[in-house]
Amino acid sequence: MSFESAITFFIAIFIFGITPGPGIFAILARAMTEGSRSCFSLALGMTISDIIYLVLACFGLAAIAEHWGGVFTVIRFAGAAYLCYLGWKLWTTPIDLSDDSSAAKPRHGIMSFVQGFLISASNPKVILFYIAFLPTFMDLSALSATDIVLASTLQLVALMLGLMIIAYMASKARSFFKSEKSMRNLNRSAGSIMIGAGTYLATRH
Image (cartoon, rainbow, N blue to C red; front, side, top):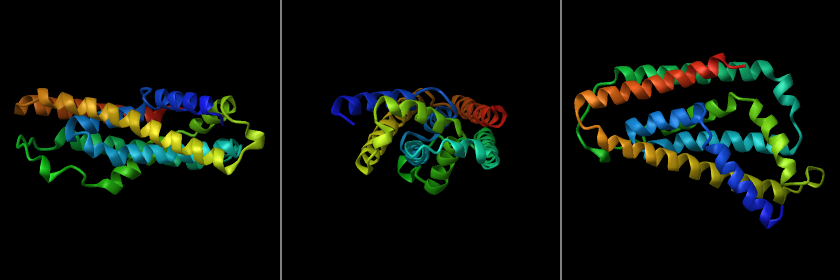
């Protein structure tokens, strides 16, 4: 991969990463209610899942999406159910107006990582995207380990950068919600986004 191809690849992955979808909706919902720091594990889970798809695409394993359709269906419904559960929790969570940011949000880090991983892993079409996308930047017939490591590293940085920028911007919106009523409305809006994302995951084909 040339320097020019690497830069173009980075920009394309960044744009792909911030394209609206279940993952972005989950980041928005979490950031609006718990702040941007709480989104790191969630974003990392989504990114690692995408990197796995990228590596699989590099080796031309598009057949996985076809032959393991049942597995992907189970993963998709598991991710959808978890998103809906989180949405329900947001709807029913007590309102706490105390500004104790030190009690901090990075709880359930592993569960956030798993949630993010499931959100991305539940879409086997991503691997098809990468298979169509990669030949623009790499000669897949003469692929080296260095190419794969470079592409994976660029993807890690681009996706995490895009997702955390979105999380930061969404968390800033929290400063406009100071009353109990506005916080309840914010939680319910975020919960509705979560449930909508889960429903989308469950019903799409």
